[in-house]
Image (tube, rainbow, N blue to C red; front, top):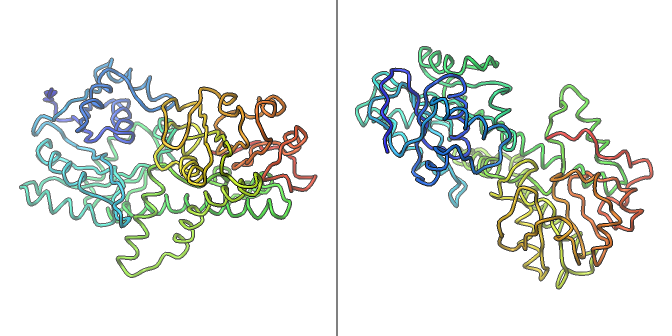
Length: 443
C-alpha cells in the first residue's frame, strides 16, 4: 500500500529496522507526521499492527500510541514529492574487507529523491564513512535534485535502552553544509530540549565512528585490566568503582568486563574505521590493539575452562547470557555465541539460557530456565549480568551440576559466597579483602 501525504511538513523514514523504527516512533512522539518504509514487507506489516519484534523498554507502548493517534504510518512505498525530509536509516554492514557496504544507502537515496518535495532535506542516520554525504549530494544532482540538501544526524543509541537514549540523549549532532538546512533539522528535534552540536557534515560522519571506537577501546581496556587484577589477587569491581569515581572518566564509563564487545555497531564500525584509516595511509595502532584484545577474549575464556576441566571434549558447558549485552535481545555478533562455537569445535556440549532468548541456536542447546541449562553441566559461564544473580542460591545450582566450575566474566558475583558453596571460579585467587560484591554496575 502507499500512504498519501498532502502536508508540506511530512517526514519519511526509509529503513525501519532497529534504528529506523526508533527514529520513526521518536519523530512521531515529537509531534510530526511520519511515514516509515522498508523493503521487508513482514517488517512493515508488523510495525503497522503496532508490533515491535525487538525488546526495547518503552518503545512498544510509544509505537502503539503513535499509530493510534495516526501520527505514524508504515507503507511499502512513498508518495512522490510529498515529504519535507527523508531520514535514511538503512543498514551499512561490513564487507569482507571491513569496509562499510553502502549499497543500501545509495538505493535509499534514490527513493528519497523521488519522495522529497522541492528544497527537501535528506538526513542520514545510518553510520557512514567520511565523505559519503558528499557522494550522496552528487547522486542527487545526477538525478536532477540539486535542490535537496544532505545533512548527517548520527544516532548514539544504546540497545536495550534505546527509547530512553532517544528522549534523553546526551547530545544531538547535526552536520551539514548550509546553515538553513541545519536549522530546519534542529527544529524537528527541538521538542526534545537536548544539547545540540552543529558542525560540518564530514565531522559529524567521523564523530560517530570515533565514539564507537572509544567505547570499544574502553571495553577491551576493562577486560585487560580485569584479567590483570585477577592474576594479582585484586578485586576488579572495586578497582573499576575507583576509576568511575574520577570525574575525568565518569560513572557511565564502559568499564565492565565481559566476553568482549559485540552486537551490530561496535564490531562493524571499528572494522570500518580501521579500513578508512588504512585507505588514507594511517595505522590506528590503538584501535587495532582493541580489536585484537576483543578477538582474543573468547579464546582466553576457553583456555581457562580447558585447564579447569582438564580438557573440553565430552564436557557440558552452560552459558548464562546469550545476547551481546544485558537488556537486549540482539544476538548479532554476540560473544557468547562465538564462545559456544569455539567450545563445540573442541568437543564440548553447550547449553544456554537467556531471559530474552527463546529460539534454538546453532552450537547451543537453549533451555527455558537457568536450572535446566545448568543440569549436569561441568561448568557455567556467566557472560554478562543477564539476571540478578544475587537471588540465585549457589548450593541449589551446585546440586544440579556434575562439577562446580564457574567463569564469572563480568565480575558480578560474590567470590566468598560461591567458593564457600564449593565452586571453582576464575576470580578465586582474589585477596581476602576483595569480596566487596559487585554493586553499582554501569551499563
